[in-house]
Image (cartoon, rainbow, N blue to C red; front, side, top):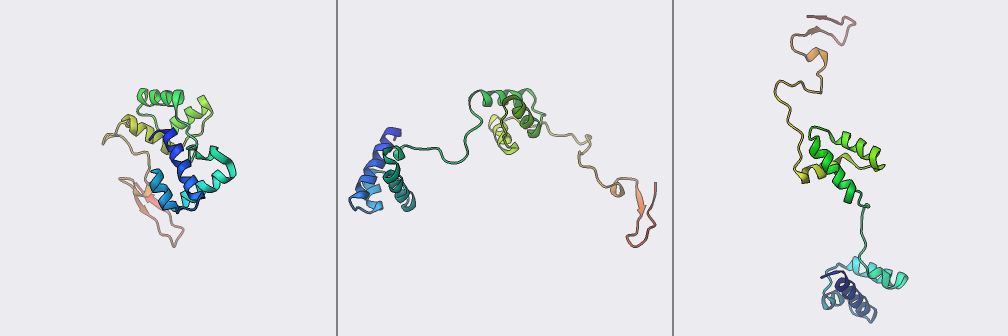
Length: 152
């Protein structure tokens, strides 16, 4: 069903509801898949706004990653797969003034098949362990005394 057909089907459903048919019967006859709340919400909007309420409208947050912005970000991710989502986020803001979540950027990276290279076994972990847990360090720390000295 294209937009015009959906609009006509919704109009038919609303017209049938206005003459007293139940929402289920009106939706079935019009071929509209809906639930009770949405059917009555549409009826209410048509009564207030008129026929314009029958057009499909986008729900949720406005789309930010379309057209040139999406293409630019895709090229950035392909050119530098080792870059982080935060780096891409800062670049998007600097270039286009858009605030996009790291989660959204990572979804685009996944859709493109771009992954950051895995760290090798010999590469250091960015998260440093507390000094008392590093290899070769033995501490004589007692939480009950002020005797905090270490033996290397």
